[in-house]
Length: 113
Length: 113
Image (cartoon, rainbow over all chains, first blue to last red; front, side, top):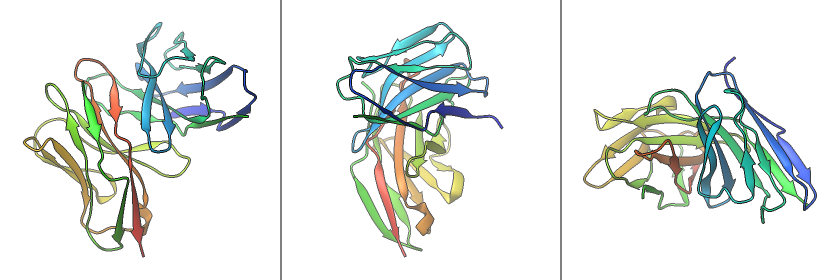
């Protein structure tokens, strides 16, 4: 079935370690997004990519990095520079056309100990 | 700048009663508006969208939304609430100048049996 797969679902890391969250889609979508969700703050955009080999910073990009080497994949690295990395991370994609909705993965919950 | 406001953190409604979850927006240009639902520890599921046309938009699971341009609102409605509708609901707007999607802070809907 077509969809977006995020892994791992749960991740525990020690402070100071870099962590990479995987996001893969088989929907043939051009655009992909990473959001961070914290209680009471809704979803905040970290990075987004409209096409392979191109991406833009969102509203809270500091301490995060991404790559878009393949259309299907948009991994997010949470670096040690991110001050408060514990959160629920959501990946999404969108097909071509300007008015489409986002399709979301099931999320990855990162806890930094 | 584009923005979305969900003025209620939580809405309680009795099963069988109509429900409304409020959303107001601020955009330059034509608004592209969306509603999503999220169950605990899951990704967001798309419910409905307004792009153009009829002000009453019908979506999944019996939900509908009313677009009101003069009040810059896009309230989510359902004629008869179910206990299974209890979840977190997000309103979103697409930034007309970019591919960014901006989300509200979410409203928790609790349907009481």
